[in-house]
Length: 135
Length: 296
Ligand code: SF4
Ligand code: SF4
Ligand code: SF4
Ligand code: SF4
Image 1 (cartoon, each protein chain N blue to C red):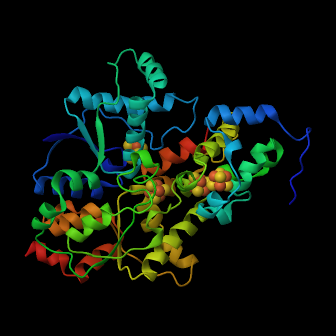
Image 2: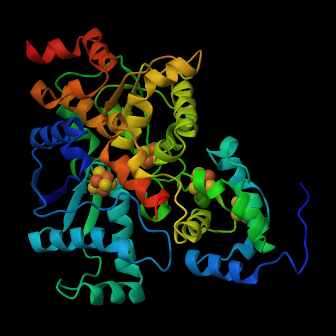
Image 3: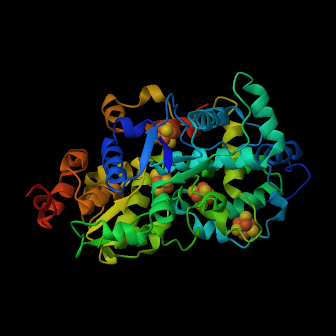
């Protein structure tokens, strides 16, 4: 899929927001792909981390909103420890999640978890899952 | 030296086997500890947003409780608690501005500057007991057990809170080796089990967990040692689902490393709480004659 570049598609406000929430400078990314190669969730993710960085650099909010990356990311920090540019990609993913969650776009609904599952799941799964996937 | 012990919520419920075995080991090794009074859930995941400090209140409050308790070290068992408390502590130590905001917000509490040391059971044993003493305390060697220690993510990443070298850790292997186990090294030992995605994307989590188990068995593992109740859920409790879905996956008994340590140190089997593991785990120890040894 080619990435379209134009003034119209670049959302500067979105770029600034991601920088502000994550505290990370994704402009530093030189597209080596180490993050994508390290991601355990790679085959479930529609836009791999390297491409997320490219789309951010281009301010492509529209393309990133369609991606499932931030919802499938498990915050494992593997990309972060391996990035040669020292970018904390996990924080960038978190900011994309937060931008959705802060608009009340949740990915799971705690009340829909079956009784059977709530009896089996350890607390740590529910606390972390609710923190990451609900607003 | 006496230390504070932070259990976390899962260890009081679904992961009692992690707590009871670990505490019995501390007793056997002569470590003095006291459970943190009035601890609260740490929140399980560290806040990764620059503008979100409210989620740091819970872990920082726990650290303040430790200070009030009069200890300088707090011991954790669950890897997720370790990570959350250790990262909150690093922030309070190093980020003057955020520290100021958090301390101001909690004006009913004394100011906190990151003075407490947050440790995990593994690095605590390495640094304060040492492998030689641990080895000398073994009563029932795990000799002949082909064991794959699985770190997961939160003990090793990010680097500033890693209990060992992030990319090539040895602490877990050294610990289990001291107990007599034959160590099976496998590349996926430091990869993620899917974590909280068990809620959002259970199939994706199952797949990565299956990859970890297949990698370990391909390298010759006959059992796996864990440090985290979420890993235990993803890798252990969901194994039945895995075996149904993925042909060629072999069942692998799971243990908290502290359960195996408790077996090796010969503590009262009542503390293993093996009924909270899957059946194959108990069967496996029986097959190795490690359950009988203690009781006779
Ligand atoms: S590893 Fe770092 S530099 Fe390389 S593509 Fe990923 S974000 Fe960019
Ligand atoms: S933190 Fe998220 S994006 Fe990075 S490697 Fe892990 S799962 Fe992939
Ligand atoms: S990490 Fe989990 S188990 Fe540990 S205290 Fe926090 S929520 Fe509870
Ligand atoms: S291995 Fe799994 S549960 Fe354990 S720390 Fe990583 S993601 Fe968490």
